[in-house]
Amino acid sequence: MKIFPVLEIPETLAAGPGPGNTDPRVLDRLCKTGVADHMQADVLRGMIEAKIMLRELWGTKNLYTFGVAGTGWSGIDSIHGAILPGDKVVVFVNGTFSSIDSLSIRMKASSLEDLAADSLNPQPDNVVVIDVPHGESVTGEIVEAALAEHKPMWAFMAHWETGSGRVNDIEGFNAACEKHDVMGLVDAVSSLGVGDFDIDDYPGIVAWASCPQKGVLSLPLTYAPVSFSDKVIDVMKRRGCYSFVHHPILEARHWGIINDEDVQAGTYHRTHSCYAVAAFHEALRILLTYGRAQKARDYLFHEAALKQAVSAMGCDVTSNMPSLVVLNLPGKLAGQEKDLVGACRAENFGIWPTLSEPVQIRIGILNQLTVEAITDIVGRFADAMLKMGAEFDKQAIMKGLAEYYQAG
Image (cartoon, rainbow, N blue to C red; front, side, top):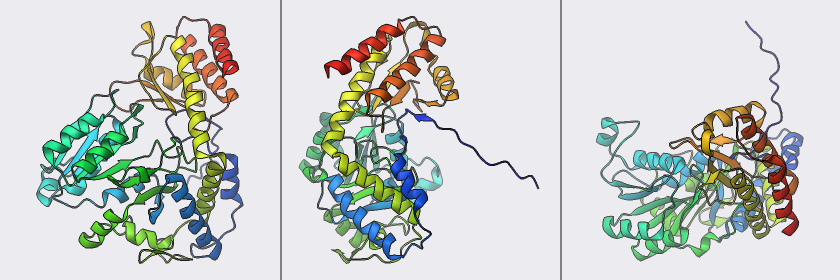
């Protein structure tokens, strides 16, 4: 039998759409947590405290607010569990991840006949997909027109679409859902912990899901924050949910939400990791100590610096997200986006291409909210472009960046 050598993974500057570089304090809690079973008193206390911190972070009084064990897709699957076969749904798609969300919804809403026709990509008539071109945002007008025409039970939208770097109109989405008595579901994977918003300000939206590794900056495999209003919980009590693992009501019991009340300790639902609980708890502590509003301002400030710098290199920025710049390369480098990304990643500079057409470059600043970090990112990207034949004065770029920060 072949025994492989110890796996050594080097430090990488995670400068893509996510995950971001994990704070050393989160890693410290992960590594220094004692071996404990998932029902040990401190593990359960940590889950209760995390639930309370999540309500503060989401800006909500929703009782059913907790973390779903896994990645962001686990949280998305939990809110999509409210959808049953035959339900009419309108889904808004404007990038890679809202497209995958659409597939998840089509699977949930499909009949047996729909799945038999195409089990991996079902096309049920009761799900209407509104495609918005890549690089454009979903507007309130688009949502209003679709809900007025189709009159669904559910509507779904990504708050911020990481695939294309576009912020979608959450106010317009909420208003249309309220007006047409539609229950809104939202993918907030890219916005929670980056933007400053209270979900209770959007009563037309009944369920939200996020992820651990972007704005929350925990490890990628810990807990996906979710929040459900009483309205959707009542619907699920009445109709049920085709899931055990991601069933919101059953999952909530482990977080001390039982019979619509907060209790002091949860009951068994699955085997939770004490290490994941400790890491998630610390990530939430760090974020709330920093301050949600301050962090949102800092993302806007540093994203503007990065956008100014890459634009000065001749790149065409098409995004409007505070934590992510999506761009096209200039002139003779156009079309070489994947090659440039590959060269950067070979140097442990982790930028990303878009995962769907057209191919663009994505540079993220998750957990990179310092002058030094942005200067490092700009310098590395400038070097990579120059190696591929770009023509600009790097010193002038770096001087412009310095002047931006001096003025700020």
